[in-house]
Amino acid sequence: MNFEDLQNQWAALDQKLEAGLRLNAALLREAKLDKTKSALQRLSFFIWLELACTLPVLFLVGSFLARHFSQPAFFIPGLVLHLAAIGVLGSCIHQLVLLNRIDYAGPVLVIQKRLEALRLHRIRATKWTFLTAPLLWTPLFVVTFKALGVNAWAVFPMGWMVGNLLFGVLVMVAGIWVSKRFGNRISGSPFMKQVMDDIAGRSLNRAAAFVATLAEFEDESPAR
Amino acid sequence: MTATANHDRFLTLVEAHKGILYKVANAYCPNREDRQDVIQEIVIQLWRSFDRFDGRCRFSTWMYRIAVNVAISFYRSEHSRLHDTVPIEEFALDLAVADRVLEDAGDNIRLLYQFINRMDELSRALMLLYLDGYSHEEMATVLGISATNVATKINRLKQKLQRDFATAQQT
Image (tube, rainbow over all chains, first blue to last red; front, side, top):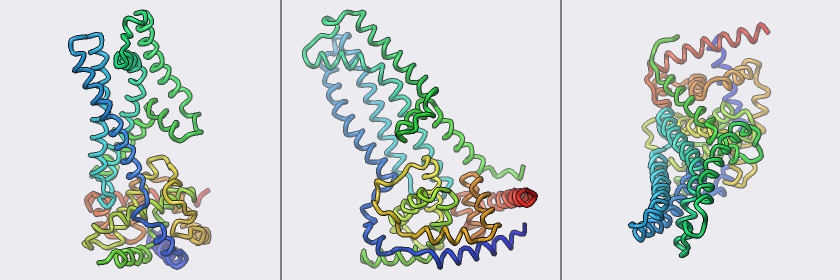
């Protein structure tokens, strides 16, 4: 294969493409490009939404903690919820910072590294949200009941409360097993497939592989 | 510059280099519907970044950067469809014409696209830029690596393509 010939054939194709392709300028005008939603904009919207939902939770649980500072039976479950909300808040802020640093006009390697950092963070956030959510059920139960004026520790037997905690652990383990065992078959919803891949660690593996590809591409060592 | 004049200037420049949209989309998305989506996202990102285009590099070089970044990002997000963004069946480019041009192209070009589709995401970009005749320095600017590194990688890719073409001709 002569590469000069190949480049000439490519250039000929390019000319035909340029001549054949019709850019519909009128359509582009109608599309009102300023108002179109891009993938990054949509992602940013959902992060802001998450942030907006987390802030009131943080405030409410914070007030609960202040009111029950001297009652460990309520303070500890409240603290667990508060720490979880702080974690979500921190994750949202971190994602927004990463998102803000992405400018598609930048060098490909730099931008892809930033996008991959964002993807890695999002995958870890999804994974930890799904893994810890079942464990937060009991503290949420205790705090919500107390906020409504009911002492869950007095109303429900201790065995039932411990059972709930253990059920949370069981749901977590089952979730991981289902995502690893059946994740690939769940293709009906792209969102569910993505969540399953995130929990099972497949997304993380793919992201790590791409980071390795980027590093390899940057490597200046001579031909292997 | 007024908003309309800016819009017109943008459309003129994109019109002059519209082939890049198709070539990049084709290198990253074998599926036609995905190509439509990726072209739509590229055009949106081009328009969003257009105010920051300072003319220090050629428009086509700048366009390649954005197109490749968007296409890789799209490819990496496992082809999530963008139908909810702009409800337009054929976004700006009539791909049927371009597909016919490609179908009528010689065996070498069709094979070349097959080989490009098998390359990793960054090598695909490098190959497209090489075939379009960009200098090593320009390719280095687009990708964010050194010109020496570009030269090394191009040589490797050419050797690999030589082997792939040879194998294809034998079979």
